Image (cartoon, rainbow, N blue to C red; front, top):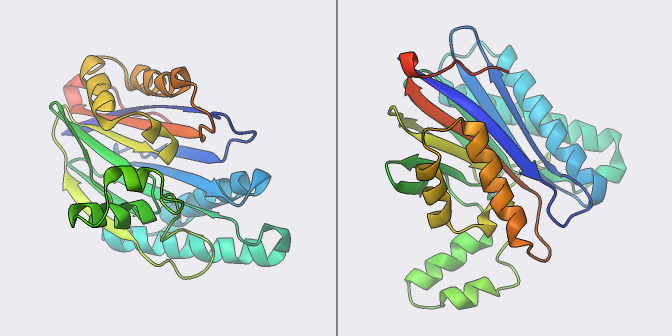
Length: 257
């Protein structure tokens, strides 16, 4: 049987507030749930949004008795979205706040996940790093135009709408939801991240996963975030990463909350 160990780290970057949030929960049978949200809404409202999204999703997921994981994830999202709508109604100054969402459930052999927004979910297997969730942002649409020869990557890099979300959790209809499942293998590394981590090229993230493969996932998480800070980029966004390391039960320590 497979088990996971976990570690996470974050930086505020060049922002005044930390609007990213991340949680991990574990059940006695080894089942685990990790959730990440990148809040938006300006100043403190982004922080409120991410924390409300995390709390509502975890509550709904834990209260559910649904055995079909994709249904359970979708129902938890629906409950979270309704909670946010109610919160905004009661706190009208928070109108317009919301956030991205990645929820990843480890069931022993599979990773079932749901994502909304542009926060990346990566799988590192061997020396290859692959994004396994969809990017709900204008950047994804613009990159399609690059593939069609209509634009260049340089055009996308300076496009004023490249970071605009095409789907988010905001208390009303969620335009796009990505729900999927992947079979895991011993040695896999799964990374949930906010888009601030994308200041680092994917190849460099893959290199760090390979370099710290034998290390505790906390070490890898701290090195990734440390790399972001070392770049000292102007306007660096909040950056958060949760690292899940998959191993055979005999080779892995059980994830703890």
